[in-house]
Length: 233
Picture (tube, one colour):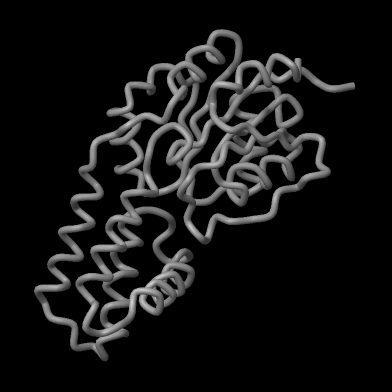
């Protein structure tokens, strides 16, 4: 027998508001700064490799991205990257940390509607100060029953959060744009996972969809989320 959904977790970046496009714009700027030293595709590969290496050191977010750009710039220039280029990389990161928040379509309506009859929790990873800033600017903060800013999203993390903010994973649903971070570990924890694809997704967040999993759900945007939750009971 299917248990009623009582707790709903929402991812933040690129689920409720735009985020990845700022990373991609900055990476384009980074490629322009290093154009004399590396082709764009090669530079992108080196940067992605640095980001993958550094996840365990810096975690997710803008600060780790900036440090990985600096590391990559040093690598591709044989440690001879001009100080002016380093300064521009840092400035680009500071601009990212100050960018205004723009909600995605249907984000407010979905959270407001579901908050009326469910425990809604924001579950996000990244820089603590940056995530707190974005939430404050979003105007959505007061709608959530809980805020969880975590270093990573694993089945154990979801199980803890769903137990703390509800009746456990059996009555929980997680919605987000990342198959790897939002959907698969929530399902592995015992909950439902709702994938809402975003046009831009970081390469390290890609994963295959669990097509034959009954607790996996796919929506084109957040407008269909309240109806899905209602169908699930």
